[in-house]
Image (cartoon, rainbow, N blue to C red; front, side):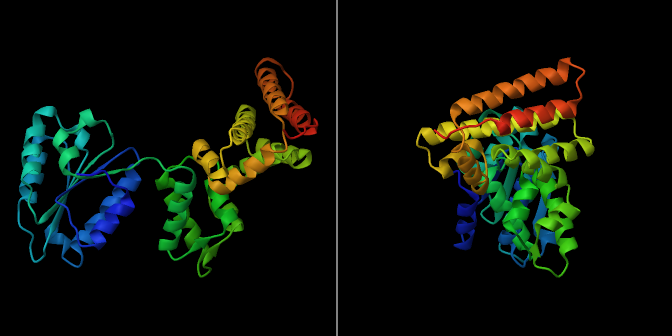
Length: 338
């Protein structure tokens, strides 16, 4: 059976094709559970979940046998039943033959859904890869993460202003569970207003720090000395460790350098965004900023950052003074685009 993208799976269901076995694998367990919940709802339709939906955890051979027994049972007052078996990676190899026997001759009226948080083919029965419709659930980054967030907001009946969406996700770990919780708070705060604004993000979510970090990175890329110095002071006042602030600025220098290099290799902006794992809108701005800097100047910026890092670790000079000196050096030096 094929490995399919989730959109292809929804298309198969829309065409009335319900497969006997599905396999979801990957480290993004929140996304995996979201897909499985949606699949279960679409297979069962209006049928009673009380009689036709069962969930098991593959903790032992007894649990596996129980799940397979239920999968062989005819649905009640419905065309299909759904049996979900989570944590397939926990099975012992001695348990694999039981599952493989079912996969060879599955119940045509059961959608048997398996999941594993690892994608190593050696960790699950080979027959599963052959018999199941497989969907990989990998961490979302860049444009995919933006699209998922916008779609999740839309499902709640809201939309986010582009700046608000960018501020929420920039420099934030791509943890969908945390992002979903932040979206719940934002929607509650917005109330009757359909659009969630940048001000809402600053007021409600945990993104005020990421926003300051984004603004600092933006000011550094644009060589805006005044705003950069102001943001340095704000982050220090918020208790951000100086080394963390410097590491964020070094990250921005690396992104500018990588963007410049890829542009010179004739990569277009979407390809650069994919290579760097960045949203397209963020990458456009990064490319524009990098075009105003020569590679020689970017090397100077990076060398200056290393000097600042050494000073923070080995001298008694006030951290704010070291960071401000770094800003003055990298923003104040002239550079011509190449």
